[in-house]
Structures are given as C-alpha cells and as structure tokens.
Length: 300
Image (cartoon, rainbow, N blue to C red; front, side):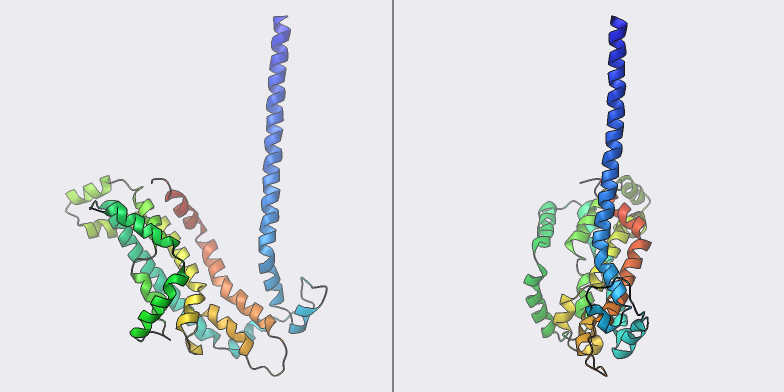
C-alpha cells in the first residue's frame, strides 16, 4: 500500500514537472512571437519610407499602395544632393552633433564626479534640484534662451545648438554617470591619493577610463538628440545655408521643380539619408549602450 502510494506520488510529481516544462515552452514561444510581431509593426513605417524613397512621385499616390516599387529610381538619392545644399546641411549637423557630444560628456562627467565622490553641505539637496529639472519641458525654457542668445547676437548661428552642452551636460546624463561612478570602489581613489594623485588626476585617469560603457551611452544619447533635433534649429536659424538636416528636409516643399509634381519621393529619400547615420551608430555601439544602462543601475 505504501509503495503504491509512493509510486502515485512520484508519478504526479513527474506529471507536474512535465506540465510545467511545456507551459514554460509555450509561454516562451508566445513571448517570442509577440516580440516578433511588435518588431515588425514598429518597423513598417521605416520599411514604407525606404520603399517610397525608390519610387517615382506618381507611385506614392496609387491605390492599392505597393510595397515594392514598380519603377526603381535610385537617382532620387542623388537628386537630393543636387536640388538643395544637402552637403552643407550634413556638415552643419555633423559639427553640431560632435561638439554637443563632447560638451555633454565632459561637463556631465565633471558634475557627476562631484556628486559621487565629494561630500559637501547641501549635496543631496542640489542633486534633487538637478533631477527636478528633468520635469521642465523644453518649451518653458526656449523663450528665455532665445532672448539671451539674441542679446549676445547668436541668433542665426550654430552656437546656440552646441555651446549649452558644455554647461552641465543635462540632468539625465549627470544622473547616469553619477550612478556609474558610485559602482567604482573608493579604494581606487584612496590608493591614488596615497600615490600623490590629485582629484583631477583621479577623475581623468581612473574614473573616466573605467566608465567607458556609461560614457558611450551618454555619447549615443547626445548624438541622437542633437542629430535629430528640430525645435532648436527652427527657433535659432533663419538662413538656409545654416540649416541642420532635420530642419533642412522641410525645405523640400519649396524646391523649384521643372514641373508641379509632388516631391514626397525626394522627401522620403532625404529622410532615409538622415536616419542612416543614427542607425549605424546605434548598432555599432549597441554593446556599450546596453552595458552602460545595465551597470549604471547597480548602486543607488
């Protein structure tokens, strides 16, 4: 009786484990399928833009719409460089993005170093105040910024787009780097102090090299934010030759054409061209981006 009961108990345990195993397989399969479907859904607008960039203008308006061009026109990507100063806009965007990244990384790292390594009166209060600035929309500060830059004659120049990056680097970047710095043991600082290193030496030669994942994350965020910025160039720039790419592609509605044909196919080609550097950068630095985000949240 006891052995039969034990056998039934073992059998029920095996059945339970088997059921649990297959349940996990089903749930995992469902999650993978759901992720794949959502990924395709989010990718559809980009695929439609990519397909439309190779189409002639008339094919964008036929019904039912075509996913693959009936007539391939890769020369659309050449025409955008001929009809507008696309090369100049690319140079402006590249210069603004690079200088903004340098400013955000250096200034945010310096502020984060102070919040993570030094103890001074009111440090935590100042840190909370700094974080609270993340709740302020850019639309609240855009008018005071415009008045300030107009007063120093910086309107219609590229300076308002990258100079502010050297003054703080942004609350989110400071928070991200501060969290990462706090994961680095203080023993490194103490050992360096014993060897006669200054605070600047510790910051520049110890913390910064050890923080490459977090710095890469800040650089990626900074580049994407500056490269895709539209509002600030719209407010501060007036001359067409000084436009950045996001603002410049809106100029396609004013392109003089030989006929009155729509220009949406050229706008699609320009949009793909503007998007590609950001896509390439993200995939090239994806490993650093993920590790920087994960490791920055280890220690509060």
